[in-house]
Length: 239
Image (cartoon, rainbow, N blue to C red; front, side, top):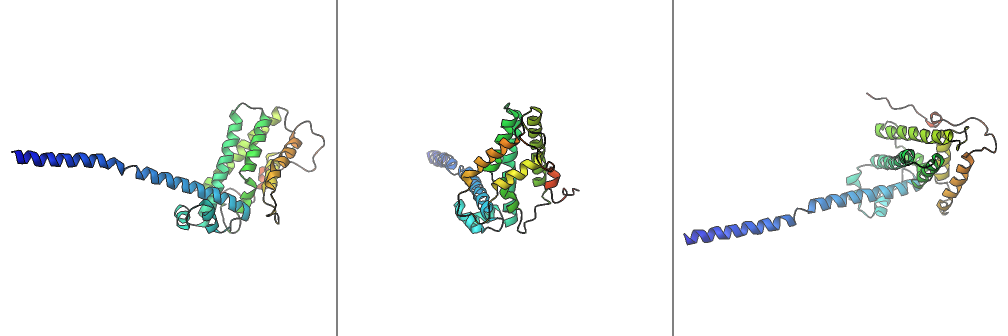
């Protein structure tokens, strides 16, 4: 009987040691997931910068290098160029949309909310989206991207309407005017790669925004630009 008890005691001790050792291996999965999430975020951030600077045909290995990851990690997250460009466009528009929606509910003065949105859109380099979405990358039928854009247009119209009703925004401008100006002021200029123009963007945006305030010093020529004027193609067909 003593021998049997001794064997049982040894087996019980092994079970306890195994149970104590087991938790040390479990945290590896969450840690790997966190690392993968950080890698994906770094790739998107680097891609946003480089695609803004060089367009949709920018070298993917340069994006991986700036993100501090290997090419294999980049392709594991984004198997092709179109997927990467699409995700960059979505992330940019998502962040801009969050700021626009916040302006409707934060209780600030209507024109101040509109002004904050414009400066955030500049920080996100919204003017470079057109550059990203060219060079053979067809995202016109991306339903999710279209839905984000439609919601963004709706919210910006509401921001402008609130400012107009408060007597703070001139009546002869439309949301198309706003998007055209922001896009032009934040789009990389050809032949200026060696110049640091980024430091002037917010200054020039401020000048533009001052021109939107009432009272209006002069009448604008032509008509207000609408969002329909900015669309080159109709909405994607669903179903």
